[in-house]
Length: 485
Image (tube, rainbow, N blue to C red):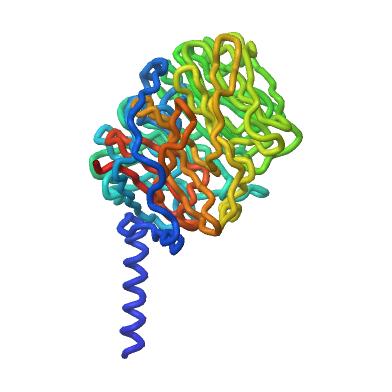
């Protein structure tokens, strides 16, 4: 009898823990290392606004700053509003089990919408911005294991989505479909499915998607295919970029341009009179001789970033140093470039951040997965600011902060660049929200989030909420950092 009671108790506790993790009832454990690392380093910052160009609001996206991983159609990764200034910051977290919400957006009520990848596959989650509890979720097609691709590095149908002008989530799935999901006050529901099996081969998969200014939904695939569909139901079309692969998202502008980077070249595409994709220009870049540690492909690791009215920027994969490259958006003409970081130790697999005529780039060289940052191990240091002055690119400053794989974000209001960092603290794997003064390159402050592998953010993006808080996904949940004074 006692054994039966004990077994029932164990089952009940197990069920509770699984449920608690699924809805975010429990925090992520801070780890024993938190006893040996300061909770705050530096000093509270004073806001020093950093002016920028105006990004036109996309007519088929939710408001800028809330619609996608890279914030807007230009993929600037920049917010007009504030982030934390380090005034008595408070950290709270929620664990969702082994589940990372790589892309975060915000609905009209300021709640988070996250595309969260787990062991069995991705889910779309609606998350309370304060408690981080899961309010609703929508199951998506399960994970498809691909030969030769680590699940921790597979971008197929589990990394990118966007919120459209009606607040609906438009998601690329693992089974070559696009799902349109209604996000209501307390629920999610599948509204429509676009099946792309007639365009995308079975051995290929969707990476990212965005609408153009006319409302067509563009998509790209791992195997180097770029396509577009008309939401009204007309047949879609796609073109292949032979011998090239895609491992990043893309950007769009008001001229109808769609800017895609492959592991060989940067492209501008647009729709022809029939709505089918056509290439308007192609610029090859130096892809180097290898896939560097810290990148997911043998080529550029950046989503194209649009600057002002007429320029686009990426990084290459050159040796001995990676370059930030700037091109004319209309003609594809190379304008300028600047090498960054130390020789033999420069790579990035995250988008550039564009604020004004400045581009901010993070060094991910040496990050090869969660094991590479265990205990005192870390990736190569480096965060740099490159300014575009007329026809010249110039590196203004380089910080020695370590940010293994985060998608950094900028606040124009505070003048701070936010990273998810791993500063050296002996053998302790400490993870922090790190704020850098964009004007000077000096570190303003660091806020400890936690220690150990559960706090690794593994290529996910920082997000700044309409409440001024910073959010970062980790391998096991979500963390929130807010000023309290």
